[in-house]
Image 1 (tube, rainbow, N blue to C red):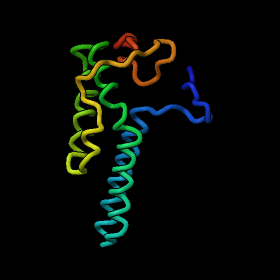
Image 2: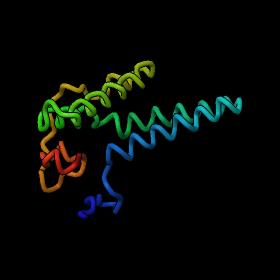
Image 3: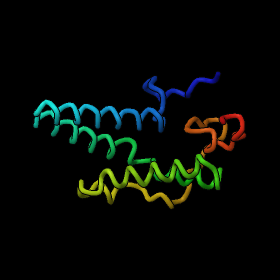
Image 4: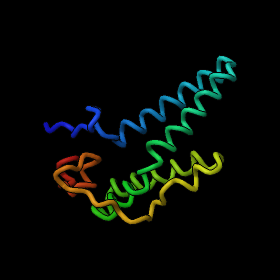
Length: 132
């Protein structure tokens, strides 16, 4: 299979699945900290999640959702992408100014070179049956 293009630092680019997995990991760590009664660890997890959303996932999830919705309308992928973007916005609703910095789901789709696309098969216009 084709590998993901690397950035100038050699790291693979952001990927929706990786970033959502990291958010889930932070929620699990926070739940463990609550269970252990460790208020400092709870706070660290919340701060980490806020920073991650601001600096990573929150920066492009709206554009991603719009691109998938335009390129694969009326598909599972479009519905999942829009729901994901809305969930990210809900996660940060109570975190002040970060909400205003998050892109809207219905923003202009990003321009993606099909040869360089790596985010999802629907975003790149691949045949849906291939990914079922």
